[in-house]
Length: 116
Image 1: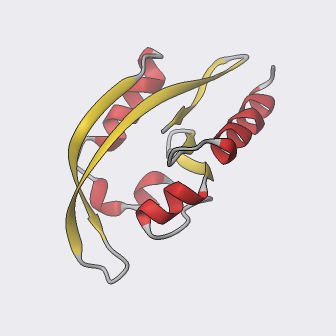
Image 2: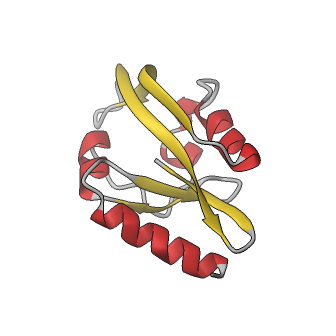
Image 3: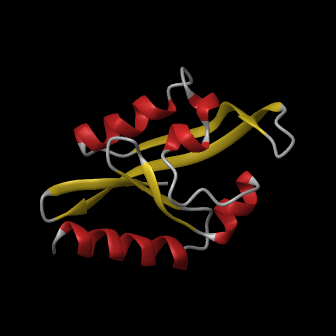
């Protein structure tokens, strides 16, 4: 399976998931797929944006580092009720809590992205 094939399979997986899900790829953690549940949870669709482009407020909250660690180690990371500050639709910073797993998504050359 080529990386393109792995990413295509990941997009299908995200779209079919019954949980809020996304797939990020590359160093900038570009969102290549989100499902309707993920979009509703965050209040908007972020496909095509890098993680920090979509959520600059995540800088210094450890989220980017966690995702990169998953890609480096090829090991999943799970968190329960992790406190994260995000801006709402009105630009107001809000404290929110999320339970999630960052799962490596594999292609022929190794990890191609992170599935949430």
